[in-house]
Length: 176
Image (tube, rainbow, N blue to C red; front, side, top):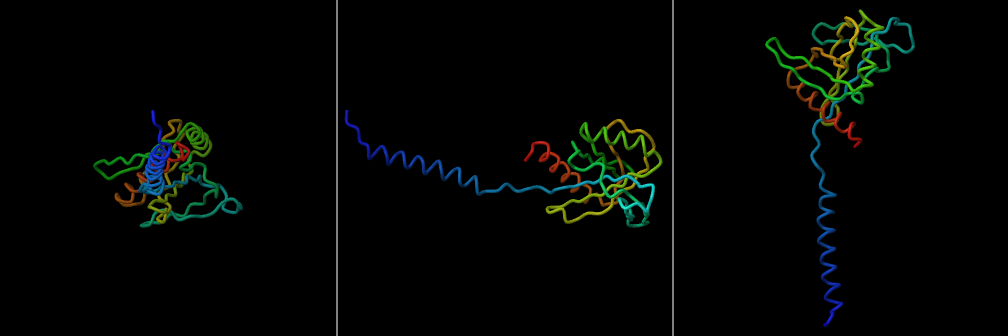
């Protein structure tokens, strides 16, 4: 049996070049990213003189000043999913938090009944759009892990924000 080492090496080299070309194309070809979203949930502060608090203006049409704690109690890192619910009168957003977020929501809603949760949102390809969206009153203990509110935004903005929040939540859950 005759063995041609040169021919074998040429075939091996061609095979390696094909494999390298297919992986390098996939490596340099980036998938199109969807919109991103961010959410920050703050709690109303009891004192405006505290160094850890700041006043914010919520709602664009009829602004309301609320003094909040500077540190957010919940973020998109605590989020499992966001849902945009449309009904006859308009729409609202429901945020479903993970176990840690649900416990945080329960603790703060128990301790700060009658105060406001103030929600800041960002959306878009580079999180360029953002503002204070809502300030629902804490009516009592919330052990469900869900936070529902009507944001001060158009339906198109809300759709983009919810899609971005879900994209960001999936990235954070998978650790990418």
